[in-house]
Image (cartoon, rainbow, N blue to C red):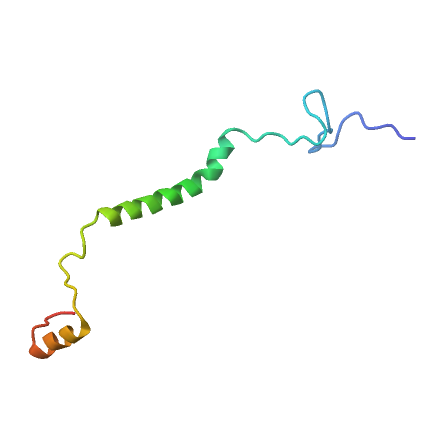
Length: 83
């Protein structure tokens, strides 16, 4: 039988150990959780800004509600300068 090597090759860690059990996953650093959520938080912030500006903005800004028949009558009378 061959003997196990005294040192592991680079990039490999032994499974188990005094502070780890085999099969345990290493815990990610605490800062990784907020960095993963940052894009979603930015998207929610943008949606919130657009929603608030639409709610707080004034109505149609002086435009009138007009049926197509009335619009045609105004055009034929020559009272429409710009569409």
